[in-house]
Length: 437
Ligand code: ADP
Ligand code: MG
Image (cartoon, rainbow, N blue to C red; front, top):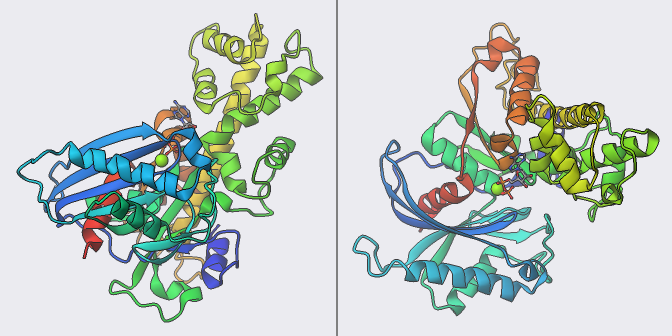
């Protein structure tokens, strides 16, 4: 991972890791004041929120959130339809404020969390590289996402300024840093997976001459697309990839994230049922892609009942397999275990790769230098967010276990993984505060 990160920073297209510049050179530090807004267009939901900041990191942030599922037709509509929907939601949200005394009628500052790969030109502008996660709004690739939103806001007559265009990982890093200044990276493990981290500006070789006051910049890795010939791939991975709408893309994500784990398990069970007499009949439902969602897979994995009742119930409910014998139930649990363990360990290895790249793995960075023994390890916080990590306890357990194993306990005790929920909302509002004009 560290080697590919280096390659992605050296030249455009130098690696499957895009290593996108974010132009975020200053992370929120707790002194921010005022009322800010954030819009989040990401996986499944669309959210609007408002945050009041009073300049004291430790204080509780007040915030109002409204979330709604993205109407499915908008995922493949025109950009005007999509952005008009977003702008209308914000307009309704603001209208509900009434004439609340503490909210000024001045221009409002907003951060836009856009969880798709974007080539940023500045903190508040950037063009869409490609859609992911089922979106394919026409005529958007290559266009400035922030400008599209700003135009839609103007069409609705809203005096709102798009101050920051932010990837969700960057929002998570911002929120993590707001609460804890030792936060150096953020990881998302939900429907998809991605990571960003704080890099030294002189390490971003592909952009020589770039200067920032802090000498640093947040880099959005787009690590879901990571690939290495060292990664062993099974026939299930190969088939899943080949049958996906984006073959050869997002290889790391397809082995790790919540969108895919359930389907890997389904593929293994299907093959087992065809090649053995594990179940009496081969249910046709086993052949339906993505019919087994990851939360149900997790529920089978974490079934603690002595007769694995939950496993039997879910196999019946999802695949219409009646009366699963105990032996087969146990095998299904084992399959879930193997698939999740692999995913969690890959994510842990990715985190260690980042730490290695920035010299926080206790070894002094990929260029070598000081030996492990005489390097004083600094407290290092990694913010983490996403339903797979936070709701699937065996996943997070395996991830921690692998971190300890790879880093060794002496180093691992300085690395703190901190759940940072809602960075993609609050964190982005914080960035709007940092970068509002
Ligand atoms: P998103 O990634 O869409 O922003 P989340 O971070 O909430 O949303 O992640 C949701 C994903 O997390 C789901 O798609 C699912 O794969 C996974 N997930 C949610 N709850 C569970 C659970 N209990 N067990 C396993 N996976 C879960
Ligand atoms: Mg998310």
